[in-house]
Every structure is written in structure tokens, then in C-alpha cells.
Length: 136
View 1 (cartoon, rainbow, N blue to C red):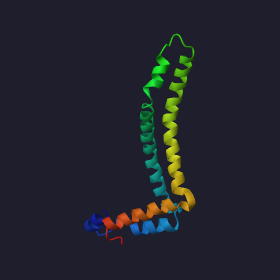
View 2: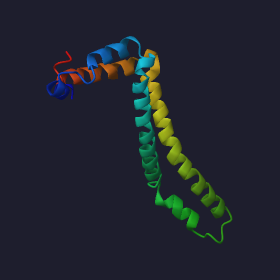
View 3: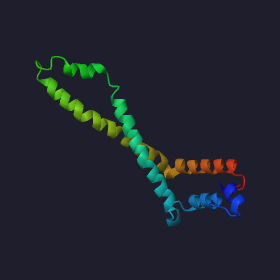
View 4: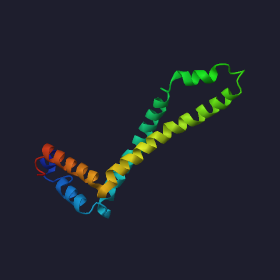
């Protein structure tokens, strides 16, 4: 993208070398707050996708569980209670599991001084130099 911007108007659109250097030196600086906001704004759709996937995942619970609730519905008193718990807890599980995985991802990225986050930053910088030789 920078190569196209340089070809078009002779200026760099976003100097990635300065950006990556600044993020490495001062990751919490106010001038880089837009990057943190951008990352957060991509996590919200991810949470929605994870929730849909979680809801789909709980549907693969064995059919036997659902069938045991329906068997002898009128004769068993605990069938209604089982149905209530199933209908109540399955959607909660479909939401709680994705939230847990996003929290786990946050812990992974920020653990031990954020070494994994810095690794991802170095990886992005390496990719940018491969695709845009003007950076390196």
C-alpha cells in the first residue's frame, strides 16, 4: 500500500517503520491509542462470531440428552426441571465459552511482560518488510 501511495503522490501513507518502532518502545503511548482501539473493535465481531460458534457447538451435545428429557414427559416429574436447566444453561454455555477463550487469548498476549504480544509485533513487522521492501 505504501508503494502505491509513493508511486501516486510521492509520499508515504503510513510509515510502518516508525509505527513499529514506536510501538516497541512505548506501546501504551497516547499517539498509538488508535491501534489499541482498532484491535478492540476487531475483537467485538470476533466475540459475535465466537458466540455463534459456541451456540452451534452446544447443539452437537448428544441427542440422547435431549431425548431423555422428552421420554416419558408426562410421567416423570424431573423431565420439566431437566428441560428448564437444559434450555437455561445451553445458551449460557454458548456465550461463556467464547468469553472464556477471548479472556484466555488476552492472558496469553499479555502474560510474562507481553512477550507473545511483542512476538506478534515482530512477526507483523517482518511480514511488512517482506511485502514492502521500502520499510527495511
